[in-house]
Amino acid sequence: MSNSPAVGSLVWFDGNVGYLLPGKLLSFVGQDVKVQHEEDGQLHIVRANAVIPRHEIDAHGVDNMIKMDDLHVGSILYNIRKRYRRDQIYTYIGSILVAVNPYMHYDIYGPDAVQKYCATSSNSHSPHIFAIGNAAYQTMLRTEHKQAIVINGESGAGKTESTKLLVEFWQLSIKQMEA
Image 1 (spheres, helix red, strand yellow):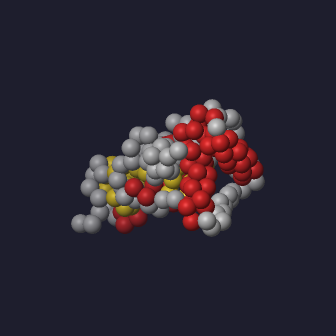
Image 2 (cartoon, rainbow, N blue to C red):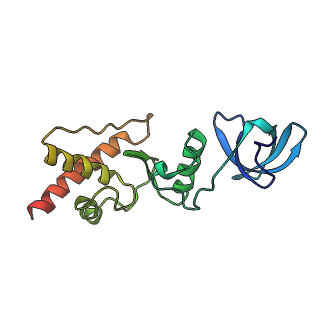
Image 3 (cartoon, rainbow, N blue to C red):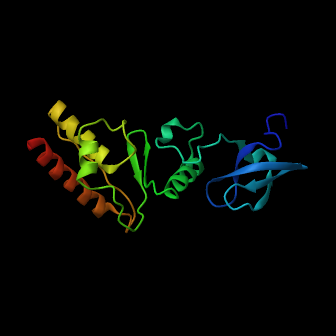
């Protein structure tokens, strides 16, 4: 068990939900370990060889998951959940924007947001659909090549709303540039 994490270590463990869960290793029980799930406090007994060391994620989550030391389905979902609970519905994975539909309107899409994202690079502000729209528009102007933004998700995920927001961003940003 020399490769196993030590008691008190942060770990990822298989909680039989289809992805790894965050926890803390509490003790060794023969060939198994007792792990406490970080989010709900429940105790789990799992095989010792089924836990892997975990790096702590900032309490606010990480705005670009490329910066994370652990990158797998569990860590991605964990980070997105942390951010969502702080009303941060957008998160990057490199140049990909992950959006969680909050099923409510946030006051982050008006003319002030257009101005904020219109004149800067996508890395200088928090993740936002306007940053993606601006990056595509600026690349189109610079390279004179057409650009595409792929919006994907299940029914009700917000694909149509995201498309409307991008069109609104482009309309408002062009008006601001003409003014």
